[in-house]
Image 1 (tube, rainbow, N blue to C red):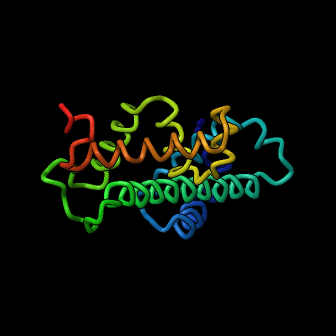
Image 2: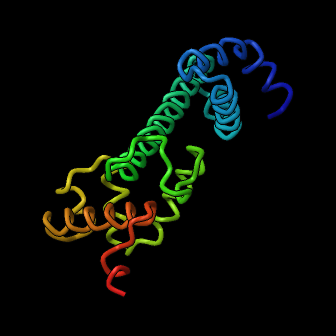
Length: 179
């Protein structure tokens, strides 16, 4: 961004921008990241902003919009963490208990471990699990996405969830027990 554009558009609003973003996002680190996204967006849309009848209002609207994007992303991330806990602890173990050291300890590591496990699932099972747990899709929506019957979508989800549970517990699958 040129110095003139910064001084004309951003400098007079900067404190108000970060204050607005921080109030919406609530986390200072997320607010700083969101502010950087807004500044990059201002740079990308500089000509459009300059032509706007009220550039400060346009920029503030960008701040609010990007803050809501951050909130949605964080909400999905928290929902995934909760869903992951449900998948891993559906066998009766209490959240926070590990399964013989097989379960990653940190939430971020846990999410990465589960995402890697989901990637190892057969394609339709992995997609069904992600659609159900992350996007909170109904089985009808999953069926439409996977181009299958609703009962089949439920089956893909159930089998995928069961395989994930097996991957993160000490209990070997029936196939492994038979060997």
